[in-house]
View 1 (cartoon, rainbow, N blue to C red):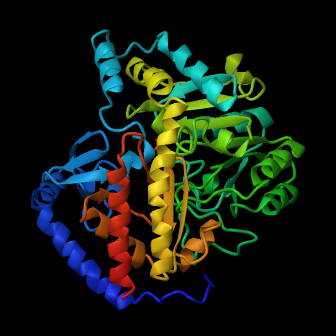
View 2 (view 1 turned 180 degrees about the horizontal axis):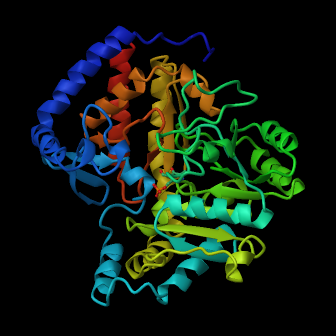
Length: 457
Ligand SMILES: Cc1ncc(COP(=O)(O)O)c(C=O)c1O
């Protein structure tokens, strides 16, 4: 379809439909709305994490089973949120339930290693081709460890990251996550923008940002800061900006550049690991970094994180020179769930389920064409997104062209019709699960067609 052959979305109509959808949601969420008011008395904003406050109101969940979740009003949804991409094995998977129940009875915490940790590390080694692993409790801890290791290995302080990427909430990297256009500076030298109040400027000043999918920009950053950059951390496919895949050769070029400058390359596979493919982005794109951060899907819904690395990258940890620590690291309950998840649930064969679902979700392409929507659609493994832009998003700054109101309405529309996607859907990719049925996938496509007809009319 030629670029100029798209319908222009009428934003007045979008606002009118958003009002209707919000009213319909409020009607279904009477209990949730009254609970939110009670919760606000002791939970700031009525939630436990600021990003759970997405408008019009938080979705309070009571339970999940298989591909479905239920809110506290009793409404049922097919879950495409999957807890920010964690639950690719589906909710309350019988094998995970059994593993956790078995472990609970044996004691849940000792702050000493249990035997399951080795089985988990062996599986991760097979998947990602890196020999050494340590476990933590979140993606934030994994990327924090990566920053510390990169700095310790090189004796340098600065970190290179991609503009518009989130790597967790620690001070070193909560910079230029979703920078506003007016703050972000020029594309060839993006400003380092704190994402939150409370970040010391000294941390912000240690971060250099470059656009995704631009290997030259990364090489230039190293040349402009000779001997200062400890390493580069990159999500090998961006997942907080829709799903943005790397151009062919991009990740190899980053690895060459880092190594040419005696710096470390870390992949943040917190979201892509065990979701894009059995071996995550390493398998999907064929590049192995020096350090690799994991969390989310590997732990089957238990709090988890992992940092893996080459023998050289993990050398200081192996020798006890660098302290990678945490009371709950390698927690027995997490290890028990992870071991079964990695070895018996998210097996190589299980990944074929995503192909089946994607072949149905691909129906969205025909709808985009039929209604001449300024939108594009990407999928890989369990992840996918619809970008509200005629040409696919290639780097963070492309998002600025998208009017927030359109993806917000698209999200509300699905929510009111039994599909729960992650809020903030301009940024969030969706995540499917191996237990979803063909009908679950078709529900998304049918809703999307109804939505397309409504906004293109
Ligand atoms: C790419 C990426 N890295 C790191 C994190 C931080 O993980 P956690 O929320 O488990 O600390 C996230 C969280 O969404 C993420 O998307």
